[in-house]
Image 1 (cartoon, protein in one colour):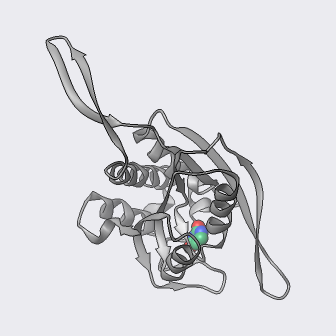
Image 2 (cartoon, rainbow, N blue to C red):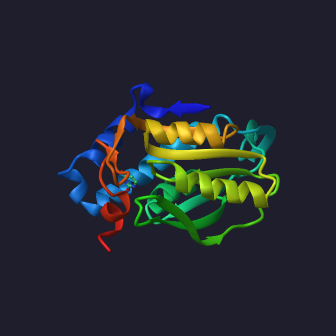
Length: 213
Ligand code: URA
């Protein structure tokens, strides 16, 4: 299932426009903050689909009843561009455990792109709802590789993938290889460059958030 946040008008559109704007994105602090704000909005939207359970709380004047989350999800992130987006999710799911994964792309002489996982630090994900955050879904290869490794190692109960901008190709790749995952996307762009940058996209999210290598 794919949910596109900007299909309906909301403040999410404003943060996305600022992320894309070549003049505004020069302000690194604002760029990270806008990624964080989109993480918060995405978390709120995802929260509506999670399992809730009845609960009651003592107030100074009586007892109030509300449904509350049955269990906090685990928030997984592909570093480095995922970090501010992850922080936004964590601001909302503020008791969640976190998992961190690093993967890199290697372009072979033949032009073929290989994805290698470099590092991962995850809690036990058995029977947990997992939200994996990766702001730019270009080819989808590294995201699918990371998710497949997590799914092979753990009996994940439910997998959500949170993305800010996705290419159409990336969405198709995820749908083909992770048909049970729920994909949450800020906006969808049609094209990609030969180096797998999304067009019009926003540029290199990692560099914009943290500087060039
Ligand atoms: N990663 C980015 O930061 N930008 C893209 O356009 C694609 C992948």
